Figure 1 (cartoon, rainbow, N blue to C red):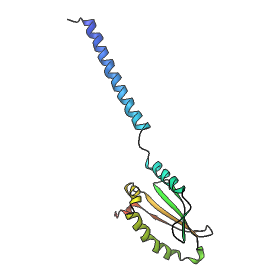
Figure 2 (cartoon, one colour):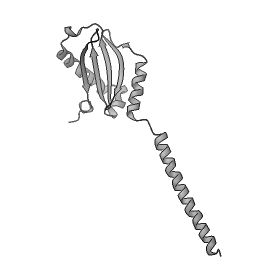
Figure 3 (cartoon, helix red, strand yellow):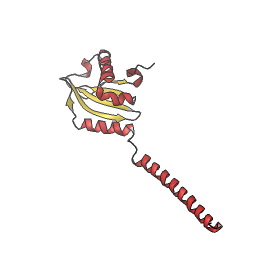
Figure 4 (cartoon, rainbow, N blue to C red):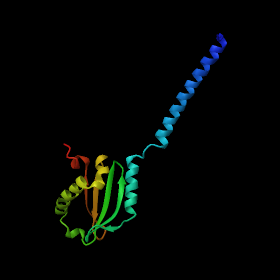
Length: 150
């Protein structure tokens, strides 16, 4: 039969083992959380924009060039375009916006490549300038618009 001194030593060993395991588990979860955590969506957007920019500028059609994409604060992805055949003064900007908005909205809603942005409720912005670099318009479409939320 173990004496009281041996029982006390065994209890201390058990407590130290439990504390050691608890500290080890906490450290493991903290390291896993901070070192191996998936990147924030901001970083995902920045990486996607950076990868897209590697192939920019690129002609989208005969009049439109995608100059670059930018991940902006507030979960906004902005595409910057130049209308290579147009001068700002020759464009009816209200008509341009009225024409472009439904096409952009439909693309955001249906393009499989944009699903990750829909899932993360990213505001999609499309900025246009003319052949001389003058600002024409910026069309921003929020998650409320493309997810048909009221």
